[in-house]
Amino acid sequence: MPKQAKPATKTFDNQAYNTSVKDIAGLADYTVVFDCIVEYFDKLESSEGLKEHFDIRTEKTKTKVAWALNKTVLQFLSEEHKILIQSIFNSDMPIQDKKFAFLWHLCLNNRLIREITVNVFAKVYFSGRAQISQDDIIGYVRSIANKDDPSKPLWSDDTLYRVATKYLSLMTKFDFVTAGRIKSFNMIRPSTQAQTLFLYFAQLYTPDSSNILDSELLPASFLASEGLHERLKKLSLQGFFNMSFNGVALNVQLIHSHKDICNALYS
Image 1 (cartoon, rainbow, N blue to C red):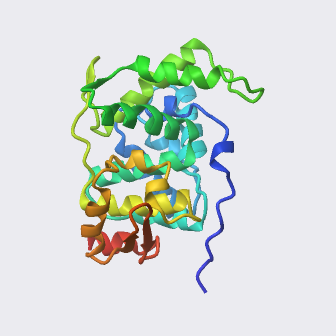
Image 2 (image 1 turned 90 degrees about the vertical axis):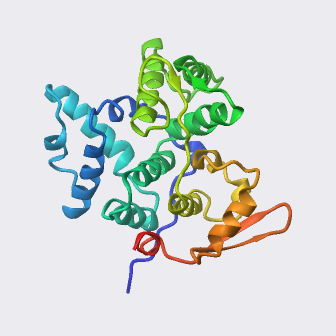
């Protein structure tokens, strides 16, 4: 009997903030992280030996990066989530599709990355602005730290700055923005396969809702809600999911399991 998927144990709004993006984004060759994910599953879910992959001079920095990977990358909400990530990074899908999938994985696991992506990065992108600056992100992260809440994170100004710069460094590695001091947006357009894959991540985020228009994760797909019905209608005809639209709710029912969707999309 296959393992039954465990329900997500976290309430997303109650996820503790952590700034592991500062360490994750510091790697020069980002495909190293993908290699670490593959090795994690090859070693029966062991994270021992991660540091051997890092071309980093100091042991202290290697340890911080390994901590960040364990905290944000090698975490899973459910058995379905774990199976999906394993199948993605063991597949031969194009590297750009893996970058989208990796971003969505981070959004599930890391509240700060998710909120910056949805509430700042995607918002600025869809506003029509040509560029995004670290100040856009610093202002948002500072608003989190200034909440009237005893559980608010205690972040220094240096931490705010490093979160912003490292987040934009991550987006540069994903080819979403240009390199250099001025961060201009590139055209962010997931392939048709990646668009379908996003629906499987969205289901993990809100397993009790099939209405994709209600998903708080939708901006992270970089698919505009305008015209989304027609776009998904064309994709649904390829047999990867079913959908219905009543003028208000755009409901998506997945056909393939999280284990099989990569083979179906990329074989």
